[in-house]
Structures are given as structure tokens and as C-alpha cells.
Amino acid sequence: MKKTLAGVLLMGVSAFAAAAEPDFSNVQITTLPLAPGLAMLIGQGGNIAVSTGSDGPVIVDDQFAPLVPKITAAVKALQDAPIRFVINTHHHFDHTGGNEGFGNAGALIFAHENVRTKMASEQVSRLMNRTMPASPEAALPVVTFDDGVTLHWNDEIIRVEHVASAHTDGTAISGLRRPTPCTWVTPS
Image (cartoon, rainbow, N blue to C red; front, side, top):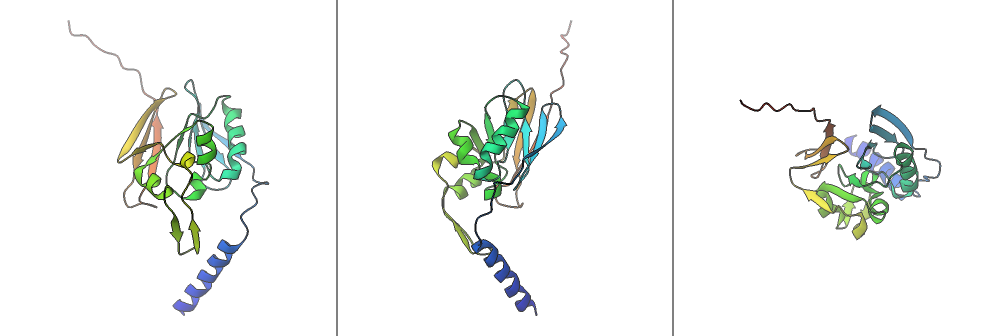
């Protein structure tokens, strides 16, 4: 029974993988404001976090390549400035598919070093019966990190940290906080 169920599931996944690429023309990018200078974009693929402010937009993940113009328009509606940084949370194509478009537009791409390693080489998915070619140079992360990286941007502290034993070997989480002013006391 288990082998039969596994075979049926595998056939279903194989049929899905063999089907035509999805049609992204009808995908709408919805903006959900979270706080001043912080929003989430919802489309198809992983959700996108957006930080905006005096230094320019930063996005976390970028869904699929055909959605780059729609994502760019949604970010532009939040702040009329070019996207400065893209932070990838892992290497899967629904989170990094827009890297090439944003990289070619001048965005600097950040990710864990394993994300760059995976994206720079051919990847084989036995589950989906699919081989993904290596990503073009413009799609690869330019800044990589081992444990984490901190951006001081838009009057925020954006911390990106690697999470071991997670969804992938390059999974990272990001968070931000707004620094609180300090009062220095000078000894008399």
C-alpha cells in the first residue's frame, strides 16, 4: 500500500513538473503595509519583505523572473527609487527567480554562501524529476555570509542570519529593528 501511494504521488509530481511553465500574466502583486517603511508583497512564490526609507528600497526574496516588472512597480509605489539590495532566504527558484532581473538593474544580492554555491551549479530534483541549470552570473549573490550579516539601512538594523538544519543548507532569516537613541553620560 505504501509503495502504491508513493508511486501515485511520484507520478503526480512528475506530471506537474512536465506540465507547461506557469502563466504569470494574471498574477497580481498585493502590498500589505506592516509598519512605516515596512511592507510585504504577496504574489506567486515566497512573500517579499520590503524596507523603504532615506537610503532606498531593500527586498527580501524576489519570486519568479516574469514577475520582476510587477514587483518593481509595487516597490516603486512604496518608494520611487531603484531597489538597492535583494536578500535571498534560500536558493529555491520561487525565492530567487527574479535575481537576474534585479541584479541587471543594479541591485546588490546578499545570501548565505551555500545559496551562491547551489545557484552557480546545475541542481537536480529527483522529487520533481527536473534539472535546473546553473544561474547566470547576474543572478548570483554578490555578497555572501557564513553566519550572518547586518545592514544599517533606512534608519534600521537589518540582521540576516543563517539557520542551520532548516529548509535548505543555505536558509537564512532576516529581521529588523529600529535603533533607539542613546544618551551618553559623561563622567564629571
